[in-house]
Length: 377
Ligand code: COA
Image (cartoon, rainbow, N blue to C red; front, side, top):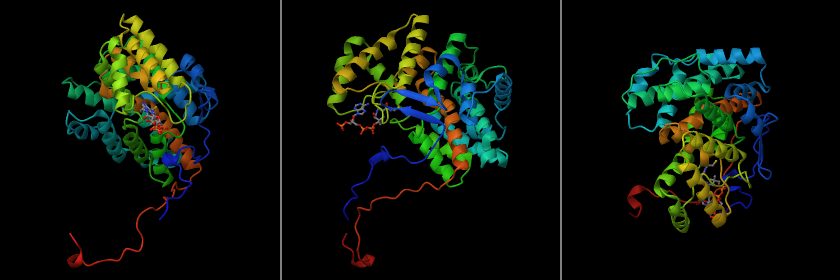
């Protein structure tokens, strides 16, 4: 059978649904959450405000924000039944696998109204609050450190850092992570959000949708790219080697992680903001090594391939300076994107239509069944 001519490979440019959550202008390099430009949100808001904006469609007032902060903080403790499951996982496991397993297991212990339908906003908040606790619990165990109690006094960003590092972070470090969380919170119909919406469109529950999303985010062409960027920098080591290493990779038709984007044709606005934070955090620590390497990689990749940085290029350099191991970068992405995933799942429940595209069949037809004894080997 001949292939259909109207296939959009990778669903490129296919408009799959209407959404009021997030808008990307790929030509102008603009990103908007519910009408608000990401640059203003990154400069002035907090992750909790942005999560509220994504879930409820408007920025919260003082009282509503304080209430949301309190509520999220009260949801941080993990159910005791989950802990032996987490503790049975090998310490060598990738934290994204741990996160996916933990969210899937957590569903079993949650009240049914948290799981599906419009009332699952409770589940959205529970998952958002619990992800740092899951990561912290696993990371402390694998590094031989005792578990920490949840800290209801900290913001989401500060608690995430505290859960991973076991100490009170500085205000600059908290702000760096808060900005990173704001920038990662949503991004229209990216692959993991689409996966979450596909699951929700079957009327499956919120936790299943987020489990699908975590599995999708893990891939190096999506959220997994930030971890690979640091592998590249570690392979480059010194600024003099940038050109040779990048040329060599391109000559072997390898992708340079942290560059290129399906939607942005110019620089990803999130990369612009994270570049500044990479410099700021580096200057504060008198360590601009990664920042300078990344600037040099940027120059070569633009010159050679005409590709611009995406969100994943600079985030890892910030997290590394904060003392966070590379394999926790994508889980941190998840600890932010969970707000966007769940906002999209709630939107899907409000206006549900089973997502089920078709494939152009290009396989054989009219084959005749041959009994096994008569088949050639
Ligand atoms: N490094 C080298 N070449 C790249 C590239 C990269 N990071 N990104 C795209 N290209 C090249 C492809 O090789 C392809 O070239 P070709 O036509 O000569 O084969 C061309 O650009 C188009 O790439 P394609 O994969 O079809 O575009 P896409 O829209 O599917 O790609 C990404 C989007 C994000 C998957 C892609 O840019 C990529 O793999 N980037 C690296 C991973 C990454 O940083 N992911 C995080 C995204 S936020």
